[in-house]
Image (cartoon, rainbow, N blue to C red; front, side, top):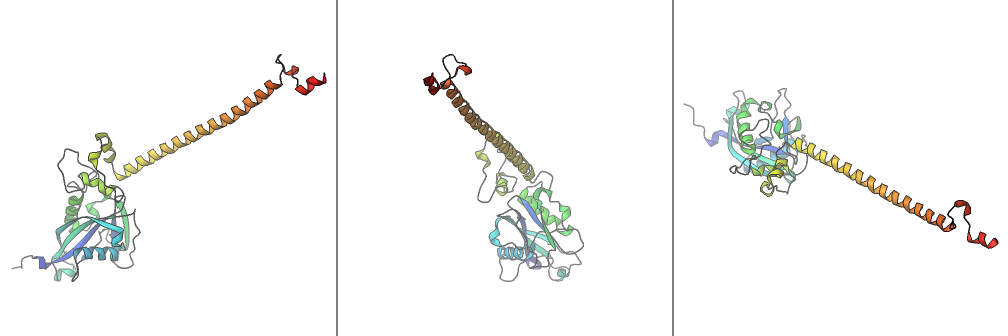
Length: 275
């Protein structure tokens, strides 16, 4: 009879879902020929806390220091079994993971892979482009649970990553609640949807890419308005200068004209004294 699966039979592990300041997620690919991608992760070593494991693994595998990101949320107790052919199966049944959702303080910070052979390359992808098929089959259930806990029960799907709840919906600990928008704004700024009118809230219902496109359009409109304003101001200044010069010339001409008003009858004071 097989022994019961106790906590001692599972290898404790920390995994990181790393988001940059714009909401993109970091994935790593091993040097093998398989097409799968992974989140940074690693086992806990002796006398190490789970937070220390997270910091060490992220530093070793992708070269990001703890000062470059903050821990947003965590989810523990997620387990997956090793495939039967895995060399670690003789020591452990599988991994008992704590998933951390961490947010970087900058946009797509540069990764460094030379400290560990774990990944041969990395890439940043938009959150809504994550698909379970990108990950190894034996990890997909755990990854799905973590993603749904962090980003909502419908994730991963086409719109779940960007859908926000309405003001009347019950509060939730996932990113589909009001707290989701905290992860899509610059660090240090907390977005409170209840402070906005219903019309204003619609501005935050699109994807990150849609928001960037909308901001680009607004920036172009602003630049066009600035150009028109500048051109108008230039025209006014030029008209003032031109008009001022013309009025001065007219006054000079009028001062030189006799009451008859014809140019041919113009006489200067000096000319008049000679007659």
